[in-house]
Image 1 (cartoon, chains in turn yellow, green, orange):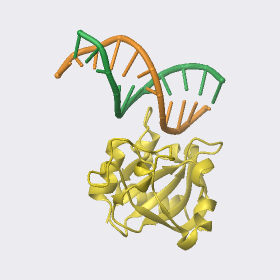
Image 2: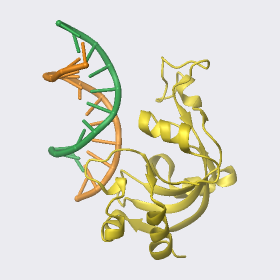
Image 3: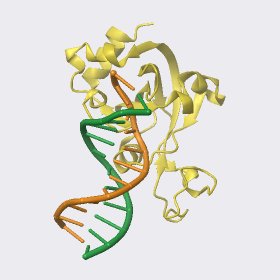
Image 4: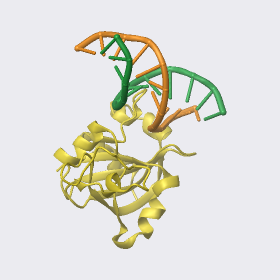
Length: 154
DNA sequence: GCCAACGTTGGC
DNA sequence: GCCAACGTTGGC
């Protein structure tokens, strides 16, 4: 079982948007970065734990706890001409992009990026590194445990 | 809305 | 296969 941090722009899908969806589950479509795709396609399994992170917004930070609820399957938006995620080079026979489903476990009081930066235990998190842009990053179990124990208590 | 950092593209 | 130009990300 692995641990992940997944970024979502609240203007696109916020934690409250996720909570309002049927089954509180969302297809994590629209990832168009090969490294992030490979994480989903090759390493994610149902039951993996996820930190749901709000990015590119007024208060960036961890907004909830979630779980991966499916293995990866072809991202439907790559075939949709009307989608901004349409990829003319992708075909159903040779899909390029994949997504998993993510289900909300619980919303938590926002752990801001500043709060995360305050803890030396988390200094190695990819999301906190300068210039990091990956929207999906693995977490060390120790980082997950630290955050859950110290920062995400109900 | 600025801009540094990074990924991708495409000419050569 | 190099690398300059370009587009995107995302914190500030």
